[in-house]
Amino acid sequence: MSSARNDADVPDGDVLEISLFGPGYGESILAYTGEGDWLVVDSCVTSDRKTPAALAYLAHIGVDPSTAVKLVVATHWHDDHIRGLAALYRACTSARFVCSQALKNEDFLTLSKMAGERSLMKSSGVDEFNAILAELERRRGAPRWAMADRVLWSRGGAVPCKVWALSPSDGVVTRAFRSFSRLLQSRGSPKKRIPAPERNQGSVAILLSVGSKSILLGADLEAGREDRGWAAVLATHAVVEGKSKIYKVAHHGSESADNPQIWTDLLLDQPIAILTPFSRGNVHLPTESDIQRIEKRTRYLYSTARVASRRARRTTGSVARTKREVMIRSHGLVRTPGHVRVRMNIHEPLGRVDLYDGAISLGAACAGNVA
Ligand SMILES: [Zn+2]
Image (cartoon, rainbow, N blue to C red):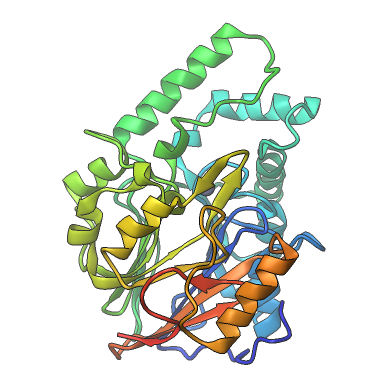
């Protein structure tokens, strides 16, 4: 990680911390839930040594992932979220592996294995998935299958913590099963990419509550309608005990993953919104209009990296930030994943946002202490 990082201290037992890394390639979330327990959601890697960004940060602050990480979650099966996930899971020897129930299907596992043997889909994330399956077999463990309203992990005591899955819905899981069956019937061996189950609708959005604070991690869940996506989450909201102060914005800020009710029903006023940009071909997320839309909802909007669809237009804020922006402009692509870190004592209203390795503020507020 950057040698410029000045606060490498391990957070206290009653502190909540969320780190968002991206895009080396993709995004990864590392959450500290207090009491020494960490969890990782998705993975991205540094471009030099292919180290998972979450492991590099834990090493930097002196935390041993083999005992400290309790949960490793794959939100969905897209390669911008899964790079390095197998290495990460192997390092987190006491963690439970979580993935979407939309993948829980014999047909999917068969297809995935066939694809791995034939090495036809190097870039599709199948290799990562197969390596995780092999590690699960070695540990004689089973994944914890995530679906709407299921508790994935919890802890009692002085600083209680609960990790809820908010998706996928029953409807999405059922349709994923049907589509895999059809795919298997239609061909003997897969020659192309295996289509991901209902794309982003099968992805695992998470509600994390620590003491009285809540955090919403939106994965790549699409807005959807009726029994899918955010529409399904909002229709039930069975598990939403309190509104969240921090939001990992769904699907890189894309409009297709936004529903105004997320902001009114699931989030507190002026939440801290964090996102990773996405670029492939001429698809760049978030777009300028995505940023304007989100800015209307909160002044606290942060990105792990410069957004391709806009030039760094703000000159207000810290000198350090301006310097970083200049550096990014002159060097082109960011080499190591950018890092947005939010820390909050669970007994206090104030939180603190820190930006590292090219992360920037896209909203009205700078980094530092936020209400
Ligand atoms: Zn994505």
